[in-house]
Image (cartoon, rainbow, N blue to C red; front, side, top):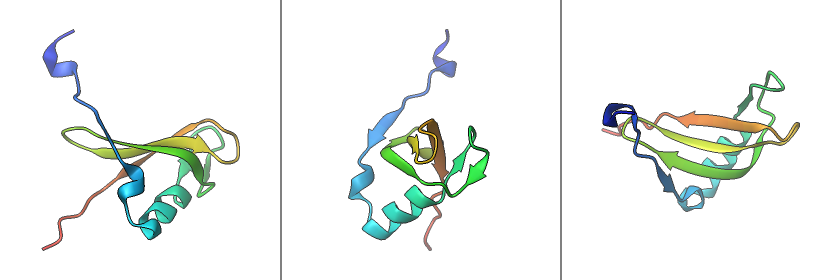
Length: 76
């Protein structure tokens, strides 16, 4: 495996986000197992790499892992 394929992933503190943001991110989900939108997630963990930020958790309906990628907009 080469260094180019390795991604430096850092865990972030999801609960440091404002409560309103937390609620929105936990509610606005897509479950690939249920094939449904906005079922919600529990047990969130937030991660970042060089190119992206995402939250991993468990679908409230089926319990399978779900991922929500966060697009952080530049505020100018």
